[in-house]
Image 1 (cartoon, one colour):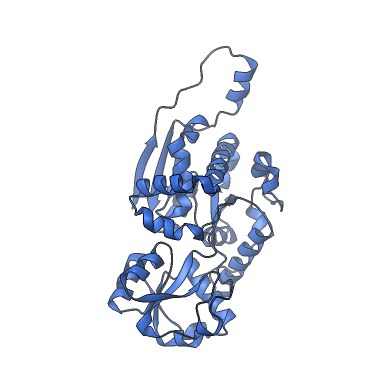
Image 2 (tube, helix red, strand yellow; image 1 turned 90 degrees about the vertical axis):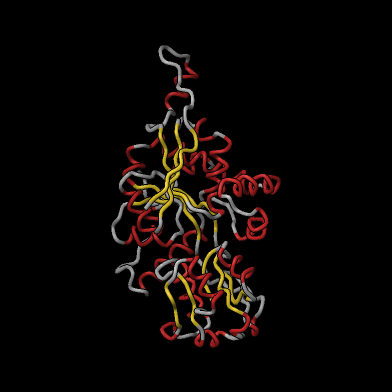
Length: 349
């Protein structure tokens, strides 16, 4: 099941006929497609997309129509990407790594935002969780197979817990919240805004975030158990067949990302995002600091991708490890801003 929204339509076409040299150069940059479809979600990683649509930057780049499509699962979104139903996908890094390792031809164009502190393990206060070992006695609701599974794996590894002894309950985010509220589960592990909503719905506390411990013994200590980042992903076939469109999309996204990352635009960005998503401004103001909007290909990118691939191997999700730079396309981003490419990608288009 997908939902679609047409965001803008009817950008002016370039004049036909003989043109001055400057106009010819502009025509040379005209994308191969004029109708653009974006895979979409409800959370703040989609703020750059919303800003770009609101400001008309996609129209300026030559896209006469921009649509958004939302999906009930990452698998469906990935299938839509490969079928050409969407042109830009912005998932967490786990799904495209799994796809690449299984021979599905996807390519990463850049990081949309780092989500290291986005996911949180939130437990009811009456569950009395003070040590890592206390987690054995409660039910933890999460989406199994998602980045939350990687989070709990890294947390168990760091604190020397037996992951197999943890009582994990596979539920989508709304049902996680309902389960914790009703005490059918005593904790949820999910990305924002669900931790925020859980904290508001019932007396509860953050036991661990992607970057910080809430356990009594090391409360406040930086412990990185999340390698999550949202990525700009395209199919390799689309990038090969539509090089000008791919660059135009990336150019717009980098411009919008920088606008969103600029502190002076924070209030406007949150307002635009909240209005588009029909969400509370106060909630988005509270969680906004969890997102770091930065497209850079650097060693941190390589490390996050490599650790996620290692998790997938250890979990039996993929049979072989995969070199993250082998499906990373850095050439276009380097043309846009060379300072954003610290590590060269292996995919050349």
